[in-house]
Length: 163
Image (tube, rainbow, N blue to C red; front, side, top):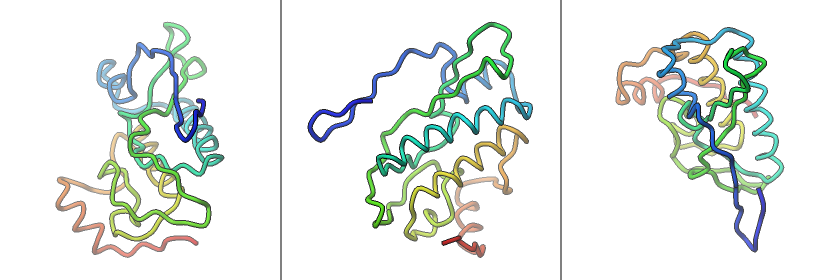
């Protein structure tokens, strides 16, 4: 990543395994074992650390926005690397500010985003938690049949948002 004037530029290598979603589909993977989940969590947490230094909210954590890199054909967890990509919805928010834009992947967004409340980079952590649950268990951490029901259920539920 580099900055020229007021613009940030990201230059990335080509990842032949594609996104996490396409990798799982093409390899008929429904869930990952715990070592892969730990590695995925570690790599995305490292990406969050970099984004945090620049006060950037990603706002679109989902399998389609994580690239898979594998160092050899064995596909062992220690050979798998995960790269967070697609910063199209990302935004800079000063530490003293909160975001309030309704955006992100519907099944991955944090409750405060769905409820049109203000939020900060912790909303990305919610999305990561949903992603990890989905990759480990093969299901979302909540029961969902369609988006309308999802929003209705989330709006009626009570969530205690930590300060």
